[in-house]
Length: 479
Image (cartoon, rainbow, N blue to C red; front, top):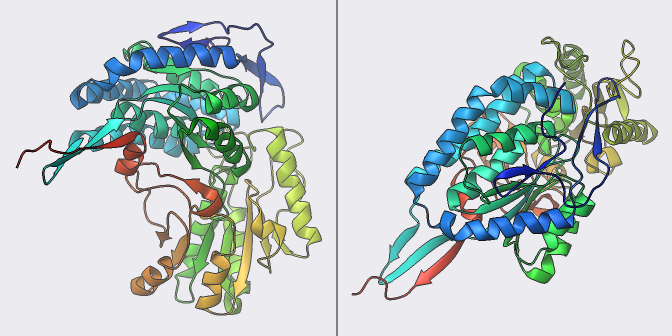
């Protein structure tokens, strides 16, 4: 696959070579395990250049009207729609996500964040009257945005769209493991007529570029989506400059199946949700909590659902599960599957190694464990692969205790035939989102975590407000 400008950084309205010559970062195909390209290795020097450009552009961009920013977002959206297939192919190649899933979810949900920002901005009041006082919302300033490899376009637009809507300027650090779609996005930002300095992109490693962004004294806010470990490091680096830090981090989301659930519906949907994007989603419901009396029935339904998921070439439209995105993730998932077996969990399907018909590539067998206890590592640690734990419970109170028995609190699910009961249980789960009976995705719903899943919120008006400062102007409205 040919990718343009992967040896360049996008700085102050144009493509430039890194300030410090360095070996490019190779991009490895998760299907063939061979290099398919490379991306520029930026450094702290490039971050300095990007931040200076963003700082210089901030006063004029922050002063633009909401309608001007809406027009920019609409131009970006139009180009994203026009280049939909190019983006889909890039994501499929760079991280192995199945092309049917990319076209149905990865790219459309990325575009949805732009549409949401447009709609939210059109109705947002930046000044509100409170007696004689005005409560003003103002752009926070220069924002460093750090995005992961698992939902590359989706996570970029989830941050860039509200930041632009707020009037902020941006330095983006996309994952060096899935940079092709980010390169295409940066070109779209350029072609949409984004003013120089408003959007900048520095590719490179977290140790170099991410750390430089987090510690930079002229960056006002850092937003990171990634592992809890990465989020802690960013927060530590940001602390001396007292900048705002928002984090969307790890998860170990529960899916409580209450005893009155529609088993034939919710079990296959629960497996699909856990294995979506090959399980590489921070909010994936990878702990399915099951009444102990129904455990054998759920094992059969879950195994049957997993058996329908074709694993293979992500460019094949019949493929449901492509490979994991990179070697490190493949090795981690294989280790965790072996740990689950060693811990004594019952292996319902899957297991270590690649599927029998695949001799190379980072492919994993869809794996389901049963009779999992909440204290097991496979029930506590984020595996980030197609591995589902079936955890039995005795009664509703125990189900809620198990659901909350985690350091994480990002997503969660409740399945019940009684909506009032589902609502009651949902209210007792310590997580930033609860899904009742597998509803449709809502790009306006606040997304973010409790506990070690992070702080701050994304999506909808909640995401916009993270990029705004609050100013009280007393006497603004004379009595």
